[in-house]
Structure formats: structure tokens, C-alpha cells
Image (cartoon, rainbow, N blue to C red):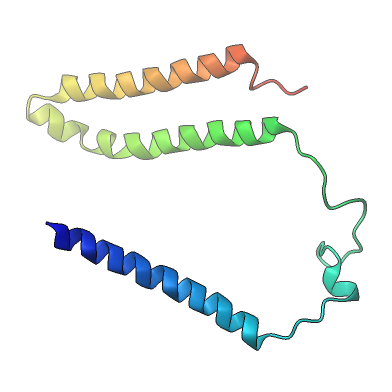
Length: 123
């Protein structure tokens, strides 16, 4: 049993060692002459306008997280819907449907909570 953990530990050590070795080797090999255009922010060949350090509204990130949650919901529900006929043939169709509805219900509660907190409003 401990040998299983040793295998994982060796694998992680070799992976970390490879990453560190690659970074150190690239630092030794490359030239370092930062000047002029190399230090400018690159915006598709255009001259930068304004500062590169601008703030974004947190609402964009929260909206994206909510979108990702509902996309993951779709990914989890798709196989269940594909196997719903098999569950039904084996006498577990109602149970599978109830589990799917419970899953959707929990996510809808989260959506209602986010809506009530005002996360989905654009101000």
C-alpha cells in the first residue's frame, strides 16, 4: 500500500524537477536585453492607449462563474438523459428522474439566491 504513494511521490518529484530544470536552463540560454518596444504592452500591433492596469467590474467574473456552473450542469445531465431509457427499463426510471430534478432544483435555488443578492444586475 505505501508503495502506491511512493509511485505518486516519485512521479510528482520528477514532474516538478523537469519544470524547474527547464526554467533554469532557459534562463541560462536566453539573452536578456529589455528595452524600448519589448517593454510596451502589445495590443495587436496598435499603439497602446491608456494604462495597462485598468480595473474590471467584479460582475463580469461573477457572471462568468454562474455561466460555467450552468454549463457544467448541462455536461453532468447529458449522460443521465442518455441513460434514462436504460434506467426506466430496469425499474429505476422514476428514481433517476427524481435525482435529475433534485440536481436541477438545487442549481435553481442557487440561481434564485444569486438573483436576490443582485449579482445578475448590471449597474
